[in-house]
Length: 293
Image 1: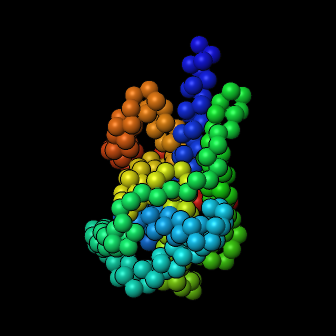
Image 2: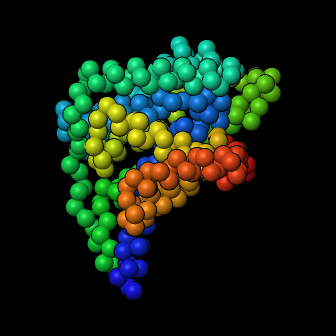
């Protein structure tokens, strides 16, 4: 009985650590939707590009994979700002199908560009792969590092949104863009900033992909469905809901993979989207960007 309980705790803990990566990606997706009401299908490709930026930064300079965040996050922030300025801004305020089709086109373009530049060969970064034993439970050191970094980045995002002038402007635009504009807030710049931050968060998540998984041009397709499931479960536009739901789904995925198989676990993400949309369209945690003080 104790052995079964230990195995259950071990896989639940593994899922919690992996779920932090899902949460980090979902934060960016939720931020973009909460501010702009844009469905960003290309978010998975932002993760993929962030992974390649971090991988080549590590391969060329031998920087610590964690330090490559200082390169991948700004690079993806700049890419997000440029895409929002010249493409995405054109569909803001239009029917959501317009943003869906535009970002789908961006996704396909980036995916094929990555195939041409990097080849489909998988890449990985050997970093902290030794297991750590805690009370008889073996946990990857890399997973612990990713979990801690994800928590730190999420905390920085919340501090930025609640404690800075631009963060408060983002919250105001998310709540009511017309009133925010009437109060003198440059809503266009706020949308650019929000989209850039969302892309930067995806880049941060992508930085950890070659450490924990394999990096290849189609890796974003595997993560985008999970990110959408996390966002739907947590509530569209809710950052707290996105982070909590990412951890929850990570635990569920890990346990189902152990007790059943990976295919059933993957099906869980589809069932989550359908079930939550049918039973509670606003998600488990509502739709506010962040909780009010």
